[in-house]
Length: 221
Length: 221
DNA sequence: TAATCCCTTACAGGATTCTGTAAGGGATTT
DNA sequence: AAATCCCTTACAGAATCCTGTAAGGGATTA
Image (tube, rainbow over all chains, first blue to last red; front, top):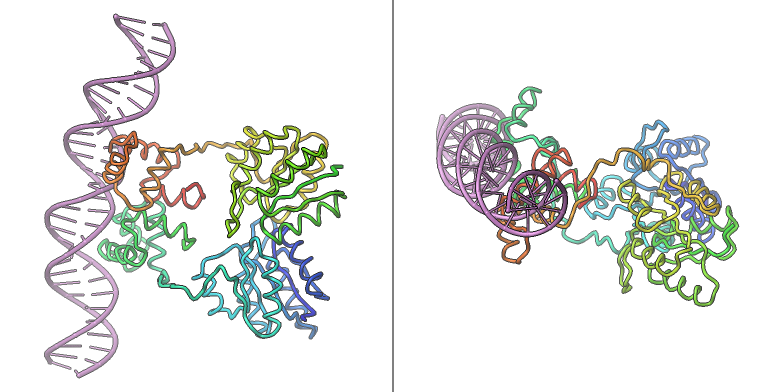
């Protein structure tokens, strides 16, 4: 089993519960609990320098903001840097996020090794995940169903820029004017119109209202 | 200190962490961990019958649905029944919810004794909360700031009905027609117009799009 | 060079939204 | 009974949204 593991989770209760599971059920010898991404990344870096690298990182994705200054504000950023620095590190995510699209992206982009949803069976699954990952396999919470139809399309920068202004209540004419003023292009009302219409199709929305609602609900914006 | 405590929390990791805190840090002698509201309520009932009632309940608010059938689906329902059955029971809520309006309502309607936000300092706060409540005081997580300006207004049933249809992309005319068909009242286009306009003021939205976006983001709908 | 594709832009008209005025009815107050 | 308040409803005009057609330019391909 893994000997050296770092746990990154900001919720105190959850952190404690996971730590107990990892040390009791899985007999991890050296477990380092962290509450901030920056601190965790530092741990990884120092350990690597000393030639005593961590073997596994278990991390959350979303971290609450507080009075402490931070460079890394999300698990995603932490993972990116950690991967770049130490390609062999095993990474398991333990998070509330249950959007298959998002999770899929993490597997593809950052080569994570496991994904566990927080929930009723969170600890049972985590134990399984650690075991699987230890044997060089991947693990995904069953409820996620990653293979299911993920026919949604990614939003590009232009889409996002438009959606942001729509969310603020600007009309298309106003958005066009704003883009022109800020020398952003494309910026004509027609093109903006066309883009939004395309999004209607892609997200099966009938109008801007339902589009923004759906995207907000899915956490895409 | 309390001797007999029931903990109701569906997330396995969190449940474990809290249990450890309560038994280790607070020396609770008899702690019962439950993952479902129904089971917790049963525990309370049986203990009361035996004349060995629980003194404190620590509970979450939101419980994930799974394959197990359930009558009580939320902490709120559990609290209501528990209060009715055993008015002297102390209740502390430990939840993600950080909407002051909602928390305020819980204090007013159900006379809860403490409210702790899940988060970085969750366990520290929980220990404080239990101590305060033990001495017949109340506790609220500092970040909640219950007294602060809560100028947001609750959405009533009519508001919600309208917003739901708007989110689905129906026009006001369609909503009006639908309400008429379903014999729901009020149902005129004008009244629906007026209601939505009122919501613009209350939520500082410029149009339906920004209104739905804001409400979705705030988790109100 | 011509053909084709894709993106941007313009324009237009029918539908919908947004906002204001106004009228009627029920409940409460004077 | 009269006055007042609040909610519902109708209507209307200006602004905005939504959709379709069409034209122009750059890039790629034949």
